[in-house]
Length: 288
Image 1 (cartoon, rainbow, N blue to C red):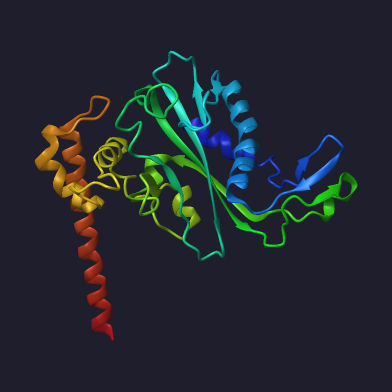
Image 2 (cartoon, rainbow, N blue to C red):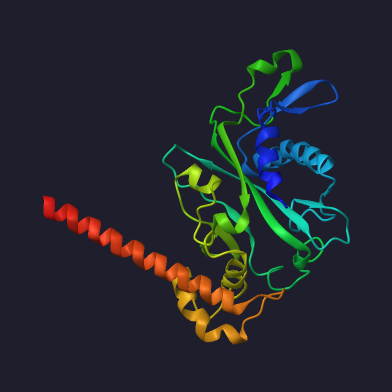
């Protein structure tokens, strides 16, 4: 049902100019922007909103922003406020220093609405059937100066605060990793990669396992200050889950047999891949 969002977003973003001079004051002067990542992230969010509004309008949806700025998600696409098939869309941004840099995003809290249906979220977590992330990756422009004032006629003298902007839209669970975004937070981190295409294509470790396993993993992931750590990696979780499944619930009903089948299939495919890699390495060794 929601495949149209990805397709339409890419199509409509081709008409969006992502370069921003700064803030235009009432006296028609431009106050330039620096490289503050929070400001740049907000710019990308603002440039994205009209695109999402046009998609929502053309497909009979309403696009809404939360009443509180600090709650999840950035945008809600829905047929009505009573709908139980809402679509969550978060806009994230990160900068890299060069094309070989690791690309890392934080993807929201795992200690709030995934555990408490109404904590720090607009509506209920169970009201959403899809969770998308729009990710922007850019390079900082060290020549950009914050709050330098230019006359409007001199706008072309302004150094843009970023360059080489790339963006993607993908389901959150497909780009999530199995580690927090940083060591002392309770935010989900994206999977580590220096390949933009891997993020765009959603090649994360939960991609094959599905949304429910992603939800289970992060619902029961130990808090930062927790003294009890049942698991801290996906491999550990996949070994831990079968023996503990009867005590594990999600905020919505789920099929535990299907979860076990997915884990079994995933482990088999991973083992086959490891065997193939060993065979290839042995073959290379023999030819030397």
